[in-house]
Image 1 (cartoon, rainbow, N blue to C red):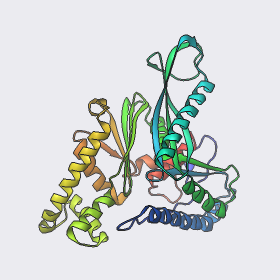
Image 2: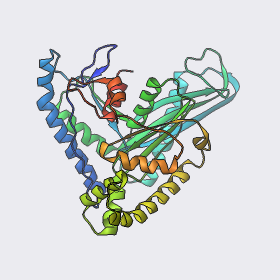
Image 3: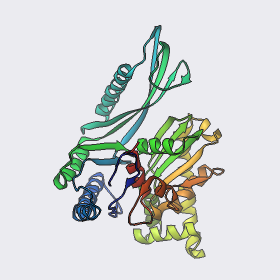
Length: 361
């Protein structure tokens, strides 16, 4: 990516490495497969990007590497810190930072009690502020009685962060360092910037094995969670039930969603998919039951998903959001072309476009 001040990011070179989670993936298998895909992608970038930069008359030095992690590589936590004192107090950046550090320590102790592996906070992001019950922004000139500070804490296994950073530094000399971000925070910041008049929104990112959701109300994140359900996990269930290979199960699922599957196979798939939908709805209700406004708010629903999974993703979302218009970002390339430029033309992966645009705001 090449960027100049006050100009959209320009994608100089892009590549995608297929990530195969396998039929019965273990945690170690997934980690090694992810690192292998990253290594292969970096090799392509190292080979092709400098040539394209020179052709455009740009410098070939790499200033910064931006890594946006999503589930299962990151655990994102939305926290609210309540500040209340008898005497009015000054609310400044120092108090906010102290509140975040306190929540980091609490969360760190929770992870220590649950896991033997070392974890690392790589991002603690301030996302909202309410003073005396009213939403506001910093700086605040007057003293206050109470405040609620919202922030997102992103944590990952230290060994995964180390392996990612090692792969990057093997290939590139990064002058300004490596920036690790949680994709759902990046997603939130970009859409808040692009769609500034939205009252509220539901941001959804669906990967092979997981679904991440972020509910934003009055521009404040209210719910951030990950559901252990994705298109590949559904295809794996079809594989097991019908005793077929995973690629064939994925093909059946795609044809089922498009309505092009023969009637006999459709009859076999329907009970499997309906059962999965019921489970999905139950998990969704369990995760969102504390947020009644999620069902009532006139929010916009935005979805990012791999092109091959978009049909399946929409099918499941429509089962829990039957009356909502689901906007699939990147589907017609309009959204991605507005926030990034690509000399190759055509579409740019929406997650890549969102991450690149985030670097400019």
